[in-house]
Image (cartoon, rainbow, N blue to C red; front, side, top):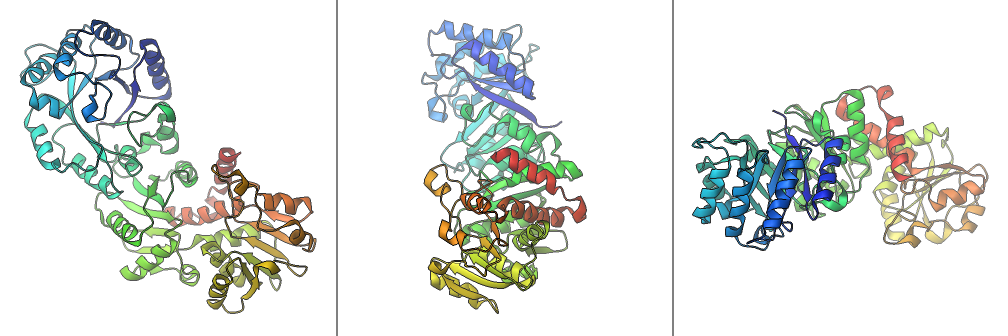
Length: 534
């Protein structure tokens, strides 16, 4: 059976909750969870019970009813005894809920509650023919439960529960791997989910490991637990319905990565070429130790089918360092740049590469810009600048590097033969035929609109450039930076960062899928990014 997709709905008003359930059905949900934490007020709240009954009776989808107490992350502040009347009423309905969710802690500490729940749900000793089943759940919002193994053993000892659910706040991507172990070792249908920014992998990959269901919110603003994706993203971006045990796992590793465009383009590309893979954001904190431990855990896990990753700031140098430590194959361009942004994992080999060099080279070629024997000035001295230096030197350009911190420019130039250093105040002049901006100046910033409006070149610098000069900005968000607008207004040829982004992504896509370069969906990549950022 494929993993089910459930949309949780926090219920304030019955009619609004039913409308949300109908929207979930239209978007492709299999069932909904009605969170009645505030709808039901506790002891003596007959109106709350009646409202819950109406909600269940009129639900357009099979439903889970959950009244989550505050002591387990919910909003219900009544006592357990008050919920007994609710469970009794639900069990007596002609059209009852498909599941009720009860916390393992409440179930084990109250014999009375346990008895009433057993009367309301189907189980091996049930004398009535009931259609409601129990989900027995345990949540920990602080991290992995210290008593996880004991809790799991206790949950498995009782045959009342048709489904067991374990969820905790994931502390790193590695927590997902333990959640997958729980799914593979299950003794009955099981839900195992990581909450928070590190837990998305467990939600998306539930079908790969036989998870009973996963939760996805109707909207970004209606999540009921940290880290829930929206149903639209789960079905369209991550192609949830196409994930199966054989699906290979890819991702973008960085800090932060939640707003990366890469999952959208690579998953769409996998669908276009019928590649059995899924690509996820993989946040890894900036420290070397985090990176090393996480990547090695992903690579070594025998269940995951981890097949590769894009690696971005601040981990590109870390990837090359790890490859050297582990004796992986290092492609020459990554070695020359001193950083790698692509990890390729196959049964016979693990390789690292730098597709930024490829992206810059292809962007220049597609713009018909010939730099052989011509002066090219790189603004910046970071990883992108080093990739630009390698690409330009290979194409025969006369390369100069210009950076605000002169010592950084000198350090870059010292690693390459023939690279000149320019002080920042002596930015490109009349002999320059190509300018590549590899600094973050002008990058989109929701927190700082002035930063987005900035440019690494003042009008006087642009006025000094010859009319045959090309200005190439490696920034792709916004699609047109101020630098490109100002250069275009002066009649200069411009190359947007989008060109580099889609071509470097195409290089990664080719390495992972093995398809021929002419089949790489660069046009699809460009369209998706353009439509998303427009």
